[in-house]
Length: 235
Image (cartoon, rainbow, N blue to C red):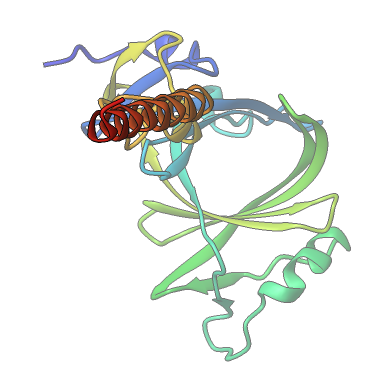
């Protein structure tokens, strides 16, 4: 059984490392940080599996919580979600980004799938990643059991990103492998081709050899026929 890892070890993950979670090895392909003027901080690691599945591992430090507690989360980006007010029938996704960036008051409750979430907090600050710096506004919602989080992120480029998030513990992870990661895209480029194990040919050289052999066969046939003709003629 692989040894569990400490919070400091988990926090030391870098791009190219691999870590095991729920029996699957995940590659760390990106690292980023987020801060706001009130002291709220997150660190984010993008985890990818060889099948293309991906999650964000988040380390959150919220100065408004007692004793500045640190929480760890696992977030999944939702593609094409539909978000409603609990008693409304209109999908809010298309206008949420504009409303968030125009400082509209957050909705008290939102519904995603069959779960209702209550608004908890809003943050705005700078997001620094290996690809550059951007700004974002985040609305955080939690379900009644505080088990599932709905995070809405409005970015400076008008993009809205929606995450479904749950809390995890560093002890849930194990088996860090430093710099051992192989990106999913590289599997196709480094994997043997379907013809591996079969002989390879230099087709230009084979063509030249075939031409030479054809000439030799023609000359041999000509000499054979000529000899036969001379023998029959008694020459």
